[in-house]
Image (cartoon, rainbow, N blue to C red; front, side, top):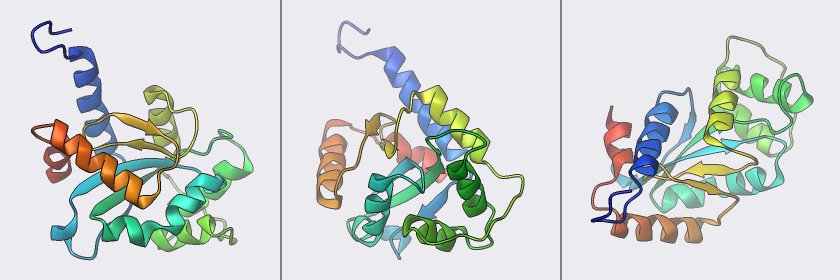
Length: 176
């Protein structure tokens, strides 16, 4: 703890580590149509079998319209060698991963596929970060936010966070 600024320096380092590690993952990204419209980048651990993940994704156009670029990382809650895991691998191995994720989130069948996907690495990263459920978000400052937030609430939370934080580390990490 820095006593002069009452900041938790360990948590600051963890936040930076989260952003860097998440940026290195093979995410499926849904961003505003114009890159210049993206104000914030949020990374979300998702499971295609999760009801709140499905609700989140059903509103992806609204999140994007509010300037949020959403990067999805795989986190099948039931763990390895389960139906959810296999569905997630099929999504991450699809030729059009964004379309496959949308289909999975709509409860549609995704053609079975296998490849050297990033699902295991992303799942392990979530475990390392202490993810216990989905959706769990890594916010632009590197902090974690568990649970679903509607587009307006998430945009307001990010605007408040940006007002508190002088420089957003996610823009620096995202630019790399």
